[in-house]
Length: 123
Image (cartoon, rainbow, N blue to C red; front, top):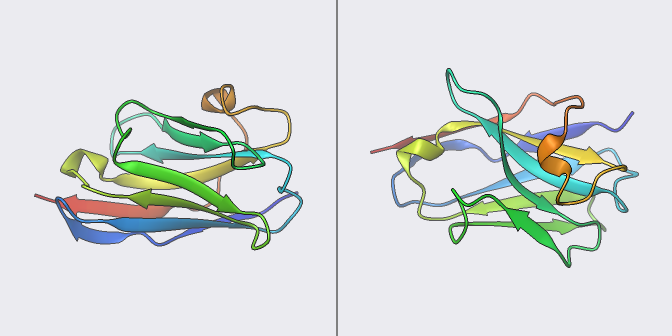
């Protein structure tokens, strides 16, 4: 089973930036991958997905223009560059990888999750 480890979260002021990383135990270089987040009291929601080749991405409207998803298969790592952060971006961020899904079906991912990384944006 592939292990996913998120890192890079922290406390930042509104308007600031953070870059999250998701490192995998391998075997994901041909899989679509994605970021999700879950705010307190809310359901987990899709943030962005990237194809195995990194050529294509699917980004949620709520973060489009502010967040950029990327990956480096040589490092088994996916990234989420978050700019112009807002208090409503406060959440635990999780990554996911699935060999059966595309960037368009990743929002329906229901597999296992890692521990996530906390992002807190103060106003």
